[in-house]
Image (cartoon, rainbow, N blue to C red; front, side):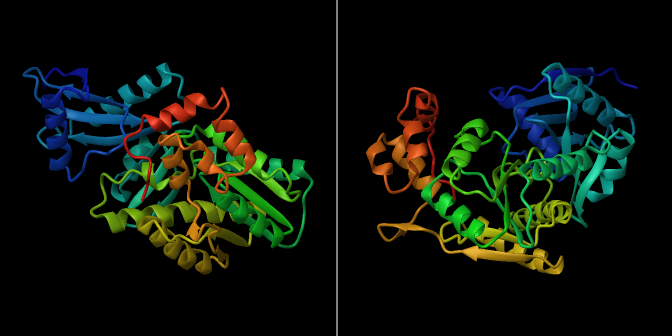
Length: 352
């Protein structure tokens, strides 16, 4: 048996990256667009035998050269990645895998949260982690003291919170006794989660029937759903939608949610497909999807992309009419300057 050693694959090392991509391609995997650490396991001749990566609190792009399979190399890679994550203080880990490899990860201490048959399984390394999340949602609801027969939900990223988002929440809240408002917690947006959550709460503080929740790691954005082992873009979008809605259905059952509200999507083809799949899935579960027309300004639907573009171009005054006063005040303040500069430094702030 060969002697193996680990070495970090740095993304500026073109040769190492090319070797990693070739190994992934050999195993039918594309390199994920969202990676922040990658390691290679090399034999004594410095041939890449196995690889794995992390992004945030997820493990991704795991592969072993077929000439080295059966030697337990994937176990070593995963153990290395778990140790790396623990050393940087990330204890709660998640991964997405093919259905035919879920049992392997179960043997390594990962537990299934949800699956899309034949496509993907979502797993975490904490037994009962998702159940405890549901208990927290229920505790937050009970603490609010809000009750009623018609219970709805809105899930939003709010990058940043606009008058369009505000209109969606106001319309949904007016149609419900209780509205559960989930803010996507992953920090993969130009506006950090803590800021997005703050602006959402400030922009909806006038509503008295809203319960606020964090999605934690159980509902993520299209941008960071791992697509490296799915064959085409349409499959990726639909698989993410079905998985996300499968998780949402469990949340809805816990909180008594009967209707989910979304904004009409005239710009994003991805979100349009997602909403179509959502309507089909929710109907199967006996839930309702209500699509609310987008709020307009100057004859055009308000979008967070437009707001980010104005910030990038330092046209702050033009944000009036697109965002609540609380959002505008944040971005022109000393506190918000760092976030605004981050947006100005980004090459592309318009997401489709």
